[in-house]
Image 1 (cartoon, each protein chain N blue to C red):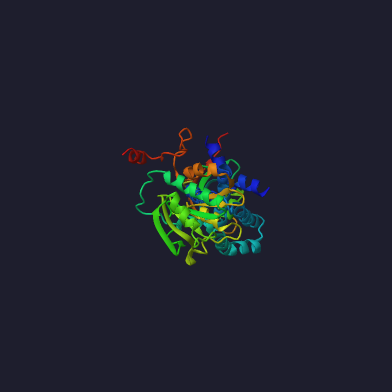
Image 2: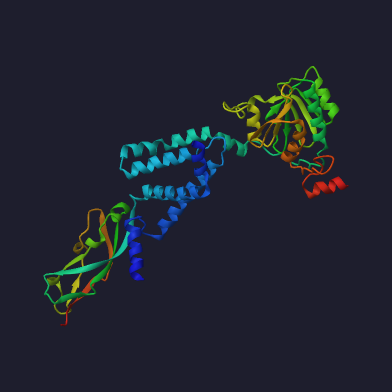
Length: 125
Length: 279
C-alpha cells in the first residue's frame, strides 16, 4: 500500500501538480501579510445633489495599498466615492474628490485616484 | 472583452490574492523549489521520503488554512530541525553524490578476457568449497575507502586468482579486490576504518551498500548453494548460476555481450576500444 502511494507520489505529473500546490501555498503563507497595491474602478455617488444631477465621469480609478490578505477580503462592490454635491464649485460645476470620501476598512489606504475632479452635469430629459 | 479581463483580474485579486505580475514570478520561484526538492527526494529508491515531505507540507498548509496558529508556528519553527533529521536519514543519496571520487586517467578497457579468467577461478574455488567475496572496482576510486595488508597489483589470470584463493593467508570473509582494468589489486581487503560509517547500514548488508554508493560490483561465491550473488548498481541478484555470471559482469561493466560467438562477451562498446582490439 505504501509502495503504491510512493509510486503515485513519484509520478512526474503528480510531482508537478504537488509543486504547483506547495509553491502557491508557500507563497500565500509568506506573502499574505506583505503590503501590496491594487487598482480598481470605483463608482462615484453624489449626495446633497439635485435628482437630475450626475457626475461626469461616474467612475474613478483608485489605487489602494494594504496587506494582501485584507485587500483580498475587501468587497469591491462596497467600495465607492461618496462626494458632497454642495461642495461643488458653482462657477465651474466641479467637485474635488478627497481620500476621505472613500470608505475603507482599517489597514487599507488610498494611494492615488484619477481623475481627482469630476464635473456635475444635468441629465437632459 | 474588457469585462472578461476585469472579471479575471477580480478573481485573481479576491480568490488567488494575486495582484501583480511579479506575484506570478514569485509563485513560479516557489514552485520550482518545491518541484526540484521533490524530484531530488523521489530519486532515492532505498529511502523514499517524498510522502513524508508531502505529509509535512500538507500539515503546514492545513494549520494555516484552519487558522491553527499555535500548531502552524510549531510546524514552521521545527521545520529546520525536521529537515536536518531528514538529511541525516537521507544521507545515502547525498553520499552517493560526492563520496566516491572518479579515477583520473584510467585507461580504456581493451578486452574482457580477464572476466573469463576471473570467473574460471571463482568457479574453481566454488568447487573447492571456498567462499570468495570479489570486489570489482570500476570507475569510482576505492583506494581511500578500502585497505589491505596484501597488495598484489598484477594482471588477472586464472592461475594467479586460484593461487591467491588457495593460499592459507586468504580470508574468506574479506574481499578479493580486482578492478575493471583487469588487475588483481589486493586480497583480504576491508573497508578502511575512516570509511566504516559510509558503508554502515542497519537494513542492508555492507556488500549491497558498497554497490549502492559506488559503481563497484560485489560478486560472492557461495560454495554451499553452488551459485553466485551479485551486488551491482543498487541491485542484488541472488542464486545466479555459474553460466550467467560472466555475461552479467560484462553487461554491468559495459562490455557488449555477444551470444553468437563462442566467447559470450568479446568486444567492448566504444569505437576506440574496437580500434585498440584491431591494432
